Length: 474
Image (tube, rainbow, N blue to C red; front, side, top):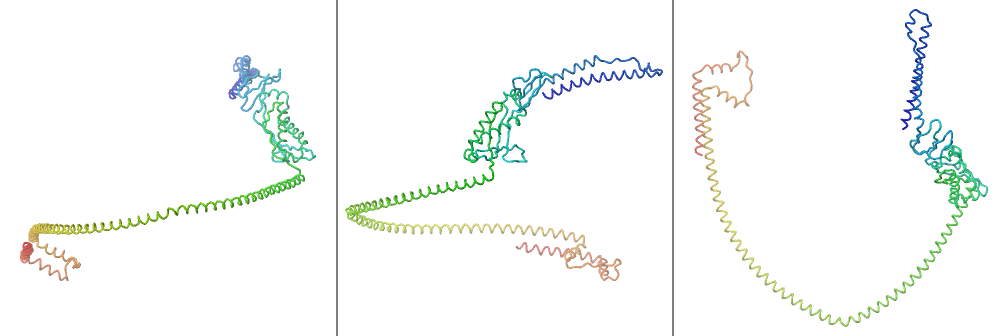
């Protein structure tokens, strides 16, 4: 609603400004026309054209329309939260009734709204001057004529139903003009009825309660509701404070002595009662011991009449128990002998059965070993035959290869002796190298070579037959 109020006011002032702008523009055009017509230059009349009249009716309408939103905005009054308002009129004065937080309508230029804070307020005084708070220093005089300082706090608020009365009759601001003098006067009027010690300690609550009642009654009649009055501190004169402290210390010491005396008296009484109780307890114990001894003697005398028959019964029971133990021992020995005979027979039968089973097991194991040996021999013979055939076939293949390529013998020999030979660098022309003649003579004898190959084939076949012969024998 505040935004609406300001929007209406802005619209009204905008219309006022528009009206003034229209009139100013028309006046400007009229001045321009007059200056052109008065210049006397040729063609000025054509340039000036016809004279435009000032639009007074339009300006008047805009001015009149501008008052509508302005008056509507001025008729809206807002009372914020925690506050109350009083409607005052320029004609009839303060009107009854309180305007609570929210939107209210008033008559523009005739009525206005006075706002008051309805939340709790706090009026505070100090017992001694304090530059940090700058609160009022409240000093009062007691019955002895001594001046003491009081630190007081009064929490109050304005009565919403009496805002019209407060606005019309009380001086403003209420805090300094009404509350402060009433509080100070109430404490200063009441303090002479008490001495300093009563205000400080003995009747402090009474002094505060009476002051609270006086302040509440005086301010309540003016529409100010007092919620609480606190007497925070009482500042005593230095000399009196020292003397009062001494008196209080002595009073405390006297109270302590009286308390200790009462404790000692109670301790003496307790000791007397404890002695009497111990004496009575000892008498009772003595009487109880004597009675218990008499009872024990009577019980022992009565018990002796039954002791001898009981002993005879115990002896007879012992004799019967010994006879029973003897018979039980004989029976146990017979049973043990019979059990041993049965155990020996069972052991002989068990050993016979074990011997028979061991013989059968050995016979079966021998047969199984013979069968396994026979099967292993047949398998080994077949393996040897297959290995000999494979070796013979491999040797025949190698003989055929060597027969076709006699130079492979040298290659095989070289491979067999590769770890025992060393590499020799030979000149490219082969001069001055003894192996050249050897190699030359080796390659020159073709017939010898072929003969050597045949001999090699025969040697290979002979070697194969020698290797196969032992295998077949096996």
